Amino acid sequence: MHKREDPQTLLNTCLKNLCLATIRECYQQVGQTAQQESMSYQEYLLELVELECAARHTKRIERLLRESKLPLEKNLDTFDLQRLPRKIVQKVKTLLEGSFLDRKENVLAFGNPGSGKTHLLCALGQELVRSQSRKVYFTSCGILVQELLLAKKQLQLPRILKKFAKFEVIIIDDLGYVQQDKDEMEVLFTLLADRYERGSIMLTSNLPFSHWESIFRDPMITAAAIDRLVHHSVILELNLPSYRMAQAKERGKLQDEKTKEEEEGDENKKQKK
Ligand code: ADP
Ligand code: MG
Image (cartoon, rainbow, N blue to C red; front, side):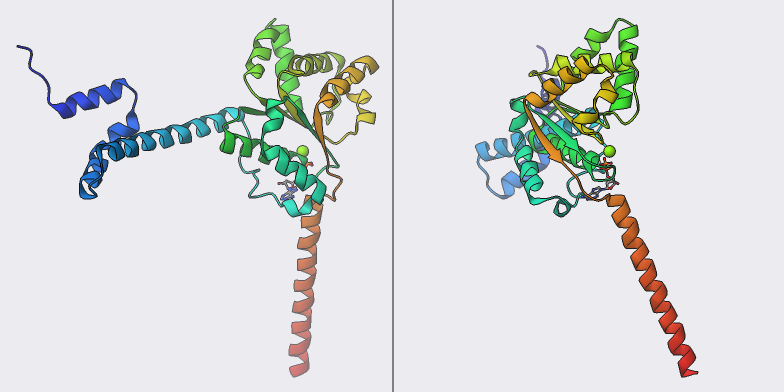
């Protein structure tokens, strides 16, 4: 007769086959606790299944964050929301609910350099991944355009558009920062048109719409791009003083105060002498 293996080995094999790695790791220890605490069979099973679910959730978020290419240091904890006007804070809070992604709406952040556009959109993106497991992709406009152009040359544009279609939102940083040539802008327009009403775009730009013709070159393409982006969109106008500048000034002020204190200290010492 075929000899049956011991239950523990069998259980381990089954859990492995079912890809229940966390239950496999924990069931013995949780079993001991269950005995000590006189847990019911159901409670014991629930405890194990919950551990498995939690571990899978953590792994999923880690994977989504890795795939998002988001700079993780730009998050909500490191962002000072108090710097923003109250109206924008309110909009940010609504965006954090995430429903704009279901409606395929866009978020367009404008403002002078250093006003916090990139940091804010990255922080929003990261929160949407962490709290709602949303599929986010971050890229700078320059890199995106190069990637699209290369794909076009290799007749792979449909493939790359399909790759982007997997994401619920694409964050395009710094639209129009560098002057692009017509080919480059055409592929960018292709992407915008492809996502229109099918997936969200969040973008940052130092240039107001009135200057976008210098990005897209062609007035018709410019109008068509703006039309598609704005149709369903939330606009965040960050017309704030540069954070970098404010910090540099703050440092300068502290330095001045320190120097003044030191000078006063020296003066006191001289007088005592
Ligand atoms: P922009 O994209 O508008 O040029 P960034 O988002 O790159 O500006 O911000 C410039 C620098 O200032 C970054 O290092 C960013 O982390 C920081 N910064 C900007 N706004 C804030 C803020 N409200 N709180 C914390 N750091 C900020
Ligand atoms: Mg920026």
